[in-house]
Image (cartoon, rainbow, N blue to C red; front, side, top):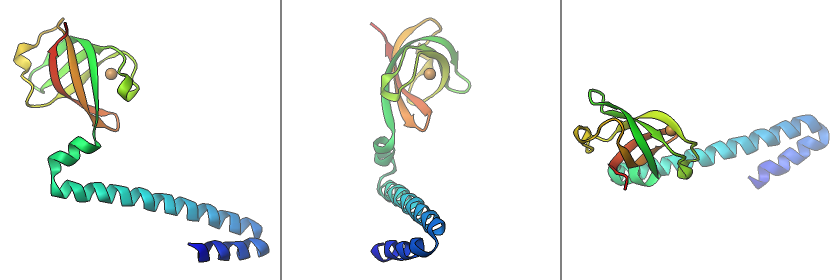
Length: 133
Ligand SMILES: [Cu+2]
């Protein structure tokens, strides 16, 4: 890396613009490399224990809302939910996929509930639903 930087300095002395572009590319490449390295590490731990890895990399959040629809066929529930600060979400009405372990038979439209979410990248699955007190 040090050698590369030095050679870019030499380039900059002769062709200033090219040296700048080269430095920018080098920075971008090392950033991409660092990100690739991190996801490789996650993949590796995932090979050791898939379930543990999912829990580790997923963001979890607690939310409160009112059930506005129960889609038993697709195992999905629509919530009119309040703000979810853990994942920076405003209040909204939306449908979530629900984990197979959650029994939808006990739920009905109009129920006020607390629920937990787990997921990443804007895709979250409901992990538990309990009556709000
Ligand atoms: Cu939402």
